Image 1 (spheres, one colour):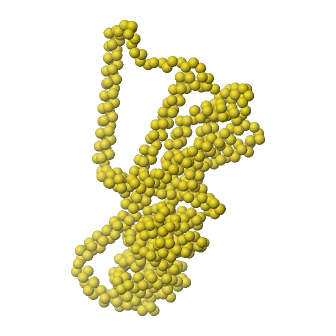
Image 2 (cartoon, rainbow over the protein chains, first blue to last red; image 1 turned 180 degrees about the horizontal axis):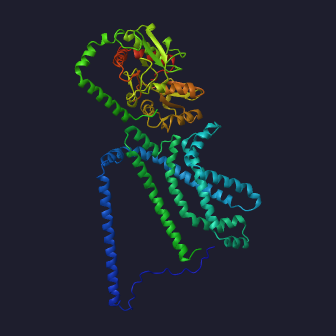
Image 3 (cartoon, rainbow over the protein chains, first blue to last red; image 1 turned 120 degrees about the vertical axis):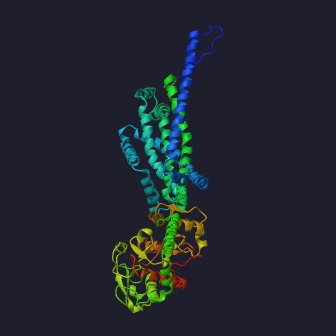
Length: 301
Length: 289
């Protein structure tokens, strides 16, 4: 457990020269100048090599014999502009699935992970069912789960069975991703040192309290980068619900491609998904960096 | 049935170009053929398999509504009726027509044929034209709405009845174009990867109806769905779709005459009448409005 004690002063990297200290020696000034010149030089070299690479890549692509056709078929600005509104409208559906699905995956994944780590012989069936679920859905391709859930459940023709591709698609995605995320959570839970658990139990905490107060907070912190990585992956996979007849960004692009035989709409849809993923990736990086800093500074366990 | 409008446009353009070239190559013979077309296409001049007899083929069994009771000789069903109309146009009496059976797959292969012409719902494609000849099309495939008994679309009799329903089609097909343009439903259309997905969704009640082309609609409602029902054909939905033509041996001397006959039948309205009679009324696929 984190023991909040005296805060160590943050190490200051470049202390302002106190007025009382003597001026740096000529040798030190020389060294500084040399370091500055080296850093300028390496920046310049990096700039030149990047430019050179960009020019070579540009020429190699644009001089290739098929480039005009590729440009017209995949990168036509006018087609891109025309297709943007319809694809963006489809992307809204992807976003809805992403938000609802993401939250449900978090809850379900955590629940399954906790069930899998339950101890005691009485919980054996729960553990077995949770393990089976994870094995099956982690191994099964998402597109097949989508077909089975999306066309299989409505085929039962039960009263009140939803037929909307949004509900069914989200359900299939939650089923698959919860299995992945449960494994991530379980890894996090098991990475908490047994001494933590032992210490908590010796303080008189119940199993439930130990999990809630001691184990899960530490586990969550450990697995945050992995979770965010799965979230980015989920962002792309929501595009698969189009197989259930929902007109999302991917399907909207497909319809436009079918109408014009120009593949630019696919590129537009792809770029929109990239734009969606970039912020998540940056957040994941930041969170990971912060966790590393904290861990290495020793202020937290 | 998957198809791309642009590819079809290219195909049509190529066909046009090819036929235009043919005309330019030998203008004298073309004028000669059209001026003396009536006499050179008479039964006496036609080099058919057997003199004085026109041998027409179709598949075994022959399906409704293209034929009736698997018996082409009764002249019932759209293709049987068209076959006799072509024969009549060429000057053959009903008794001068002999029917033979030929399997669809073997017929579209190159090689000698056991018939003068074959009517078996052959879509005219460039690939097939490499191996066989086609007459000009005697049928433009239209789009049709199908549903199951008990669905909300089962009682629909007009396009307006369909507007408020949830209707599906396969992506990148003329069916989807017809759905969005002709029916223009209030809610987003349900767009499926394949017709099989669409059929399953229809059976599950996830959609009220689906749009497929009419020949597929006949097949799905008759053979694949338990209680399938054709709601009707969509008007003006044949643009860019398949066309059926009579199949002949590659470079057959009859091709030009059959084409002339089919064109004449189209012009005098016989084809439209037969389509109305056998596809709209007998097969119960009315054109919705």
